Image (cartoon, rainbow, N blue to C red; front, side):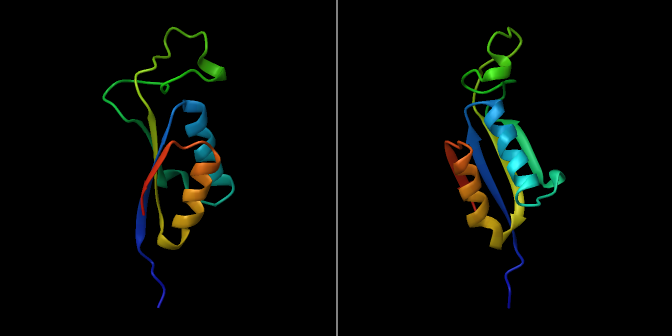
Length: 97
């Protein structure tokens, strides 16, 4: 009998660029539906991450107030694949599963 349980994985990134890249990998390489993917600040502040990336280097409206979390609801059989994908695009922490 197959395990059809849904699991939530969370990955933390230093830049919005890395978080966006993670989302694109989930959608394009693993076929995960965008409504199952969530992006949010790990703090209660609006943030672009803890450091600048290419698109926000000189922007004064791009605060560095904390890390960015990407979470995704997936079938349990995809957990190892998604964990590996998060690591490949620069996650600093991955939890859940």
